[in-house]
Length: 255
Image 1 (cartoon, one colour):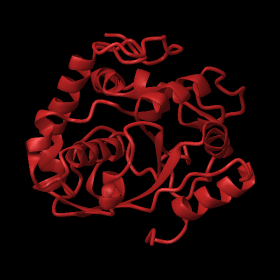
Image 2: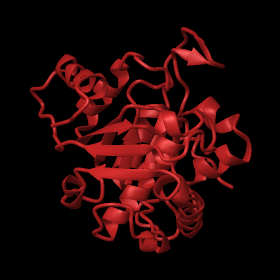
Image 3: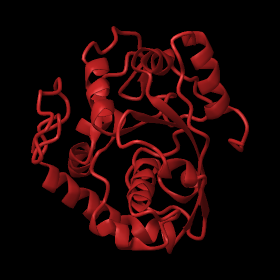
């Protein structure tokens, strides 16, 4: 399988390959299979409440960046992929699994390179389903480090935005209370995507941090989308950073 770890290739307009050289039909099949395999985790064993789906209905098909808190390595993304697929079918929740027959393919998420390469077969499947991998400058192997930034990351994220929706976790880690990284604000300033805030609750209680194992049954899960915003040229990186800190670390509600 082709991995999303290299610089994107110029493949715009190709109906069979995405910009990273991945086969679209295989990506769709993997996304649908992952959705089927995890549906009962999210909507039978536990229950997912989707708030603010109306905001997603009017979004364009590309140049949209979802900024979210981060509670688990994989299930956060899986839940968002479920919702993206349901919204494509004009559903406002994930109660009708018909959307898994034709899930949204033009969706990506930004992930730590080491997480995806060191997680075995699950990491490889998830990579093909839409990972834009980056090498973190502040953390490696579960430890805090200081090293140079990943110079390839901005080009990969730009290409993903030009092709579809992208999920970003500005804290860059599942550690509770972790700071919001300035790099996310800089990317928003540079590429000017439509930004949609997301608040996840209950996932760290219901699922193991790694993998998709259910830790507690009967948990109420919530995915809340806030009002989309697009920052203009006059907005500074510091102002965008303040916004991200507010929606990621701030109030429990995005209203």
